[in-house]
Image 1: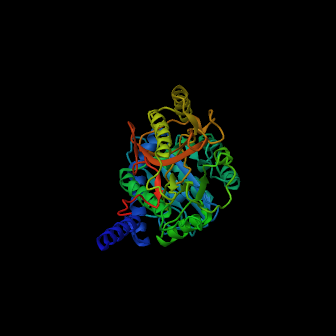
Image 2: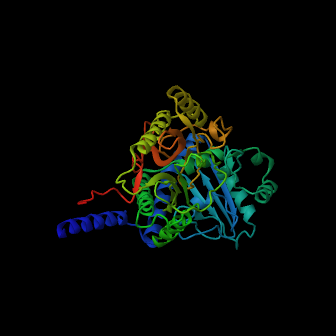
Image 3: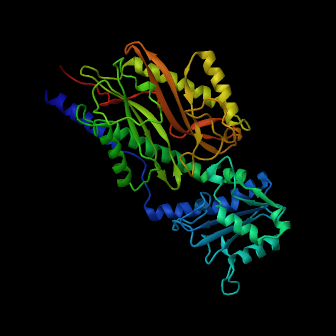
Length: 450
């Protein structure tokens, strides 16, 4: 009996120890060093290539403090939390050059790359100095952040735009173009250094998810879904991480009269007490090193006498995995989000899979810019964002659901999944694998004795 007890305690300890394991999170100071090094690498090595690709030789970004353009935030150094007064960034790529000239038409240098190009003592009018710098370089195109398809790329507010037009002469005004595609390219493209760390970022997120969907946090009959949600918020704060949205934890139950799978995504479920036999779903994301995750996974609360997740539920999960395969098989460089969606839905129909696809880019933003691949409330073309093509070296949340009839429950369930992935131009690779088995609560153990 003593031997059995020791083995059981050891297994329990190992299980709890496993929940605690995740990659180390850097200190704030260490994070700042990484962020600044990545930014320098992006400006020096990535930005010239993107400007060449988009055929833009000058990019102007203007923001006022606390009314920041979404793009300028990605150019600020780690110790800046906002633009200062009015911050103007002028990026110029001379024809034939493999580098960009990065100027800060501001009172200070902006990080390492953007050198101060305005002295108020010599020229008190900031706008006049900006125009002087533009005219000295005489660009073919002057790209500004106005764009109808992406909020991320539409950050130049109307006051700044009108003032810019007041100062520019007619010849320079005629060179103004939308920087939308360049802004999207900058936001969506990941560097090798970033991708070397993105996998670890997803691993951290997955380890937090697993810890929360476990007996460490959940006591059936007592713990509510709201309790778990707020545990996640506290855990994120404890780990010195951030999140870009409030997590969601919801329940599907065997009762045929319970119609959770029909609930609209626009309606958040009320808090419920978690009970044995519940199928839990979580939607969760973290922010770390200015990158974001967006993940949805499933867990099942074992009933008395059950030692593992029922096979019929894992079989339903396999349908969701198959839908993931169909979707990612259509990731082809140059194919638009709308084309990927149409092709995938055609394959779903042939295989008799019911469900929805609403995948999206991720990176500097959780719902990032790039090709929109369906929306939860629109399974047809998305004009504009859905017409944007797929480029290599971009990251995505492979987000979808499969509707599966479970005869043991005499009802349909919705297998809602979302996993971070990277497209290298040839194939899709999940950042930290993907869920192929539903998590059991408590975790499956080999019980010894009677």
